[in-house]
Amino acid sequence: MPKKQTSRWCASSFLKISKCIHGDDVALPLAFCPPGSVSQHLSSMPSGNPEGNEPLLRFQKEMNHYYVARGSSVQLPCAYTHTVDSQQYTEVLWSIESADREEQPIIWFTGGRLYSDLYKPMEGRVHFTSADPQNGDASIIIKDVRLSDKEMYRCLVKKLPELDKKILDLTVIEAPSQPLCSVDKDNSMTLKCSSLQGTPPLHYIWSKTTGNKVLPTQAIVDPTGATLHFNITERQCGSYRCTVESMVGTKHCDLHLDCSLPQDNNVSSPRLLTTTAVAAIVVTITTLFIVTVVLAVFLYRKRKEQHQDIEMEK
Picture 1 (cartoon, rainbow, N blue to C red):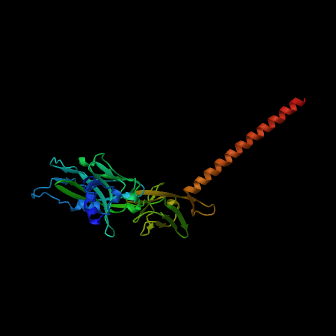
Picture 2: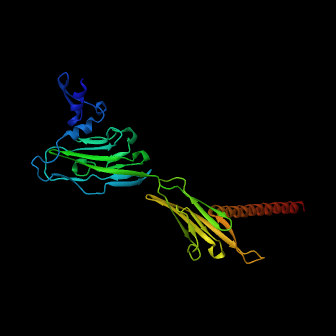
Picture 3: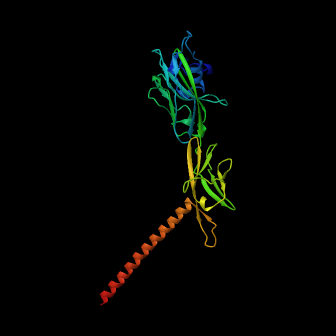
């Protein structure tokens, strides 16, 4: 079968090839359509009103750029209105537009039929939000968003005699991971905070969560915000929190500076207790308590048995 005949008829209504096989109309499965033929067919249809009047097909105004965290879901809106009750059915095609590769259809509604697995990397993750996209809502939802889903998406709606499209830009962002807090103590105190994962830019914010809840006036924060320097005094002791945030999420870690006064002078001696260290101390104390109780019960029962043996001998 000549290739151009297939391309010409593959994307037509109900996917028919006219007089290509034994002179009869034969339904062509979508898998046999050449790449790009669906979008080429829809894009080649005349758009606009031939009379030059106001367009009959209009998209609702919504933002065109969407930011979403990896692993979450995102809805790409494509709501439209058609002012004339046309007898023609509506076709809706969503595709990925890319400058370095051919346009890739991902989901298609035509002639009352739905084709949702046109692109294997997104198979099972793309769905129309409406059970009937031809009734004015052709929005889609992408589930379990991956970093590779960062693309330009095109919603193309055809309802003769009109055809129009809407372009949406999707940016997928890696949310910051749980940051790690640490401290370097020399002549001054340096509190450090680092999130090992996350799409830049990441913003680090330090705060004091105990006492006067005010950072030291002489504190110096490095340009990234991840490091806090200050001279330690008893007034500066307490709990500090580092919060790392991006456009799609926040995480934080805590540090505790416990200052005790030595007996030989009045200079404070800071000791760092991280959240993990405090938890370890609590676990240790709890374990010792349980062991003590178990040992006491064992000794009590042992003595009671010995006392009963003595009574029986008498």
